[in-house]
Amino acid sequence: MGPVTCGRENPTPESIAADWVARMDRAALTAGEQGELDCWLGADIRHRGAMIRAQVVWQATERAAALRPGAGAGAPQAVRPPESFAAPHPLPARSLSRRAMVAAAAGVALGAWPAPSREMGRFYSVRDAAPRSVEIAGGTVRLDCFSGLLVGGAAARLLDGRCVLSSRREARLDAGSLTFRSVGRVQVSIAGDRTTGLLLSGSAVAIRQGTGERFTLRAGDCLTMGAGSAPRLRGLTADELARATNWERGVVELQGETLGDAATIFNRYNAKKLMVHGQAGGRVLMGSFALDDPDTFARVARGVLHVDYVASARRLDIY
Amino acid sequence: MLPEERNHWLATHVLPHEGDVRSWLRRFSGIESDDIIQQAWVELAEADHTSIRFPRAWFFAVARNLVLQHYRKARIVSFDSLTDFSGAEIPDQGQAVERSVTARQELRFLDQVARELPDRCRDVFVLRRFYGYSQRECALHLNVSENVVEKQLARALRIIGTAYAGRDLPAQGGGHGPGDLRKGKSNP
Image (cartoon, rainbow over all chains, first blue to last red):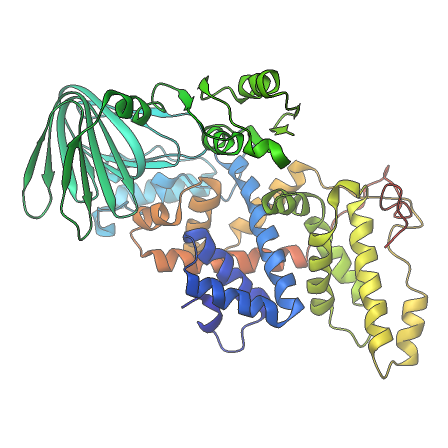
């Protein structure tokens, strides 16, 4: 049930709209929730206005990212680094030492940011940017865009998205209900309640948490585990392997995708966004392109498809 | 214009002036300024932004027209209201000023508002908006449920929305008057 029917007595339209915006930020609305929202929006023009305003206020807060320490916007006072909040999952809050809490509090009071505490673990997140490498015990994790990784001591857990774990000795990575122990390179991803492991080279074993069930992977094997469904292990073809790992090699490979589809891929990895307008969105371009170079892609599209584009600092509009 | 682009434009060029528009609306009797503002946002969102040169003046003009519509529709309008309206100049018109908000002003405002959020609310908001964590990641990091994160974000949004509504921008010089709101178009 959506926010309209929840909570306070006699909520204002602004209040209800804020609830909806927060709800939509969490995940896509269900069909029922969408119907409930549409019904509320259609009931009064002021509801529509309140909703638009709430979305605009939400958008306005996006620029707050510039206040993050190191983002170059001076010395903000509201921002504490994530390490200084509370104990990250799965550590219970009580595991915080008094020293760590005092250090965090003092850092805020003095306007200086406390150094991350080892006992708290570290959280790594990549949004719409190029993949990023994170050192963990025994290896390196290459984190794809829109992915999150929690690293604490000898343990590392993929929370969302996709990564490749590379190691010369045995390294461990938890994801969903699986623990991967590997030497070599293994790609691990989480999408909804589904966890997938793909061994690219070396050897790996995936252990199902709770039951201890073990799955031995050979190079090219792909293990998929979903909630409520039987685990599935299969070998990928060379083409499938190449496509599954394009992101790590920094490549966009187009084999029949439209410019609109290609723009969606590029936009996941770049702050400079491709915007494809009108009929250009349906045109098809084939080839391999550098993931971090949307300008070259736009130039090739113009040369091959005779579409036009306008480049500005933050976007490329293709017509 | 895509909704996200539209919202970005409105957030950058229009929202910072809402506090001033609300202040201006208080002079009119017999109207609910919240109602006028909400209806104004619908019109603001549906317009073609590429043709709007002076967003602040445009916002005032939209609100002014809505007040006028309200008075026209009202069965009973006090003489004072009509007097108020006929004498109500759009602010800055005489000064030929189009106030703009710099990115630094905007960041300072957001920093100030975020500092004043309740503790848990601020923690969630900072993780989500300053650091770009998803709600799920916020929940894991703070060791709370995703429902708590969602509720605290909604709470932050309400508080920040209220702050924008009460914001009073300092005047700046060197701008343009609202007499030329849209390229090649008359005032709405």
